[in-house]
Image 1 (cartoon, rainbow, N blue to C red):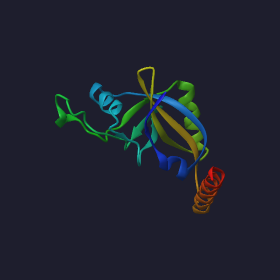
Image 2 (spheres, helix red, strand yellow; image 1 turned 45 degrees about the vertical axis):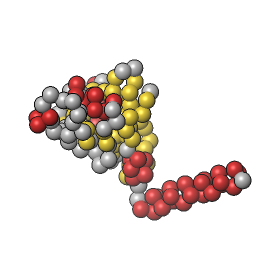
Image 3 (cartoon, rainbow, N blue to C red; image 1 turned 180 degrees about the horizontal axis):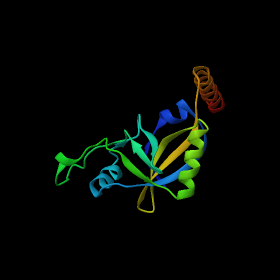
Image 4 (spheres, rainbow, N blue to C red; image 1 turned 120 degrees about the vertical axis):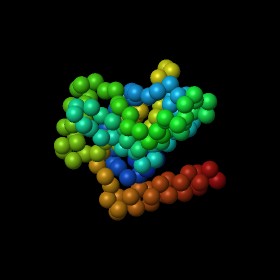
Length: 146
């Protein structure tokens, strides 16, 4: 699997307990644009409505060689392709107070996939603890290298 875009804020803002991989409904120009690296998951989220899951606020820049660029909305809602059991699991987790967050866009055997994480939002003190742990690990790695 090749990583095309990553949502770094997801792992910082949320304590992810589970990850799923879902397909995306995209147009041909959007697929070409994502494969060229013109996608961003920053600030995006997944919402559930009428037994379906949608990706919102993900920015996919219109493809440079597209025929009709005027009709393309880079922030449109995109449907996620999940099995019925996975959707019902997401609904149950959502009722329990968990959030569903996109974490990465992947290329798997020529198909674009979205990795989504299920987790709770971190408090401010949890975020500070994460930063401290990361800095300590970095310092330890520096000392080992010397």
